[in-house]
Amino acid sequence: MEKDSTSAVGADALAIPLLTPYQMGKFHLSHRIVLAPLTRQRSYGYVPQPHAILYYSQRTTKGGLLIAEATAVSDTAQGYKDAPGIWTEEQVDAVHAKGGIFFCQLWHVGRVSNAGFQPHGQAPISCTDKPLIRRSNGGDVNRFTPPRRLKTEEIPQIVNDFRIAAKNAIEAGFDGVEIHGAHGFLIEQFTGGEQLLSVLPMRKAFNGSFMTSGGFDREGGNRALAENRADLVAYGRWFLANPDLPRRFELNVPLNQYDTSTFYTPDPVIGYTDYPFFV
Image (cartoon, rainbow, N blue to C red; front, side, top):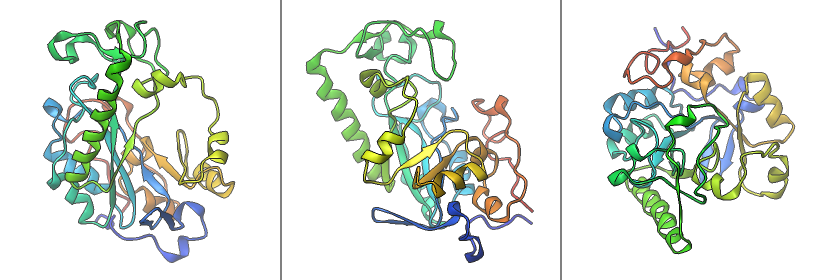
């Protein structure tokens, strides 16, 4: 029988940093392992489907923080097939029913798009009219349409798109929002931050909750917290493949290996909700 993934981690696990509680604003987290926002491209027609309810519910623990995959803030924000554009209260409630805390990631891809994703086949928008020539996480540059440079007077409308999307996310039942500012998407196109090598200076300058992600395993996450390099550690691939990741870290048992070939396929089960729990 599968372990109950809704159980809070045991008191005997508090010796390891990842499983210590944390107060994030008004939210009391029972542990510091966060589900990172992961684009899964299974929101057919840009609408999250019923299988998303199971996917996020499987990865929910009481007092655990989950961040939903990047959600477009407007019709010009899309650049990926079957990425979500709207959520419903029913889908969010599935996480709340297990005591989880659910944030929605908002994004605008900017020039990481092509005319086929844009309204009326127009050019994607950005801070520049230079075409995309590379991606920090790979990708075929030939699919990107040269962007149109935004006029200064158009920028407030983009800001307002984020404001409206945030309001809609809260109305759908999310506990909060997180804005995607990395991976070469619109915000990072404006900041020019794609060569940023270290977040440590930001950690020292910022007084709020600080989350880190990227390549961490159990040992690396514990070390990052013990060395005060972050308050929370977000896991992507390992949480994707291990819906009971906090429990596995608590018991220090082997992890399921992830299958990269199913990360972005449209199948509602394979590589999505079929990863086994620890027995």
